[in-house]
Image 1 (cartoon, rainbow, N blue to C red):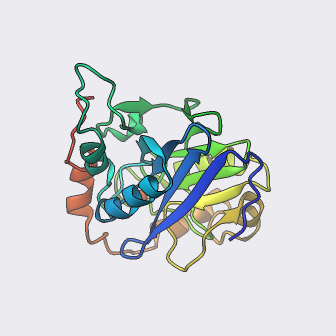
Image 2 (cartoon, rainbow, N blue to C red):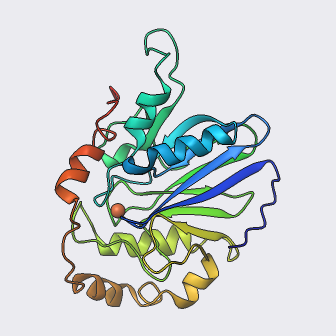
Length: 253
Ligand code: FE2
């Protein structure tokens, strides 16, 4: 993998879960040491917290791109581990969870389109609403370094399914074409999953080679209507858990 990050203050790590094929991303400001995790997985919380500890970082946010159906988020357990010495009545918790308002899930911070998530000077993510896989899906964009965290809206040569959790294939097509494909061609696509061992792509590559999203909108809808996929094994456990931040430390909001 090669990334030419323009802001040398930013620290970037791509972490992988072999079971659910989920990518978790760690971003941090190398000077202030403030850090953000995107889409942590419950079973890999120890790995993530060990890395954060080794690198001397201070985790500020755990953000989900959407309410996942295939794994339980690590957000609640991470908060429980790191917020031991703070109470909501006296101090702002060390770590705060983030998810979109439209997801319907609980989190400390509910985000909307055009909001910004910041850690120090180096991490500046703009929120784009990219519904269609679920109605609460968002994409996080680092414009300075050209990093696009697409969740399940756009995968490498694929996209998230649209047959449950308020999925809407026409809406997903519009989200990808109107929001993600209008970003600069050289921006890197960093998805929430990959099932074939690919780490990243670019906006240009997906505009040229994505087998679904290079089609017309009607052809795309027909493809998505005929995938005939089994439901994710964990959907009955993952979705209810993820609606309450992974259950371990349930936010009040
Ligand atoms: Fe998903």
